[in-house]
Length: 163
Image (cartoon, one colour):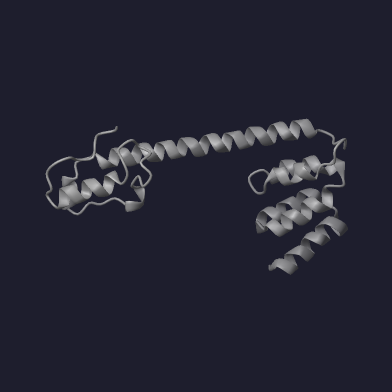
């Protein structure tokens, strides 16, 4: 379903069927910013529905857009609970992303210091796992540096062990 057809379908769900949950699910399925904006614009003037939209868009669209449409002094039922839920969910996402990055950096650093002799037997790692920014404390490009030194038989300074 294309942009115009999807917008028309959303309009039917909103105005004829009048089912906010169905409209939210429709926007989730299509993952289209224009549809989300249309939904948010439609319901920003209906305080009783704002919290349903806020609760439904977590993970799909920025709740800040909905919050930004709330008029000063507008009374919105259960807004506090929706905002707490949204912030908790966002904090969980950020924590998970940070931990994932830490694990990725730790794994990449440990890969750099495994015996590279196995590489001569045909084993290899994806080069996109290398630390291009020097975050693991081994300097920039420790995997490429170690591979180069081992495969060329260059003696001397190896990538330091940061594990």
